[in-house]
Amino acid sequence: MHEVHESIPLSPLLRRSTVALCVVLGIIMVIVCGFAVIVQRDPAGYVGAVLSATLCFGLATYMWKVRVIITTDAERLTIALSPGLRQVFRWDEVVSATAVHIGMGSGIGYRMTGPGMRVILASPGDGVRFRLLDGREVSVATPRRDELIELARRRAPDLQ
Image (cartoon, rainbow, N blue to C red):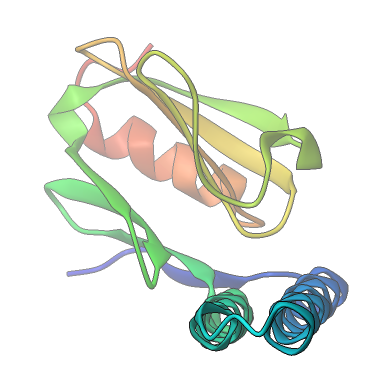
């Protein structure tokens, strides 16, 4: 039984600006590669233009769809950056769950901010930092912070 299932997208302004940046970079790279084809008569510029366009427009598509998905059940908590990476841990591994504010300095997406420290973030704001038995820390921004901390208190036997 899932007690919390939440899908947190990028904020609309952040999503549009990130996608626009990716598209503009793609256009610039295609122009630069096209210029190399015309001026230097280098056919490798065609390959560069295609790869640049594919990479930048693919990244724009990814950023449009990126979201953080938080799912819990009786045994575990899953925090996923979808599509992409995820962190899964059992409630009995949780030592503490503390309220934090996660700002843009952490970056958007899945960030490794130090040894054993992870931040999974779609939109900055209130969040929860989970410290685990093995020393890892996983932070996630969520508008349902208090609900997630209360759930951790009920599920994690050794919570501080």
